[in-house]
Image (cartoon, rainbow, N blue to C red):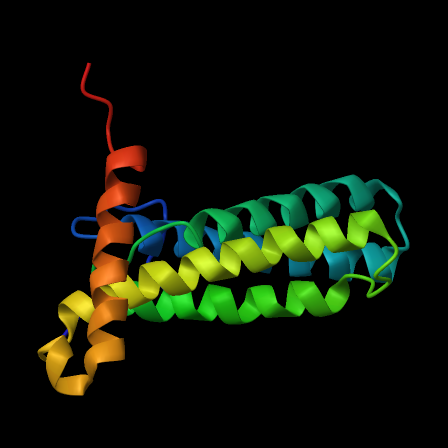
Length: 165
């Protein structure tokens, strides 16, 4: 059975059925491969000329990852991709200096933490709706969390949804 949302899909072909998260992730895979190739060239040839291109690719990669962290999954593969990007974002926190007195460090950690929190909420919203369970059967605290997630999802859809005007 072929998957329509696989990260292996090529971006230069017709992509019927591909999801937005899948397309973003496919592009991030291409960007990562390009960045790796440029970095290898930069290191082997010692050319400073590749530094700007490498930095631009790294910036695009981070931006794609941040956009993915703001998307609600529409299928299990989207959920796995979102979870992957959330997992990778944790590495960004490790890469930030840990000087509590440095306001830039604190701000960067707070921004990434906020993105991760949102990604987990979106993932939970999807899973709560996709799981074949009655939330109350898991427990009252879980059921309350599902209710909260659904309200969050509705509010996010209202705020971020298409403009009607």
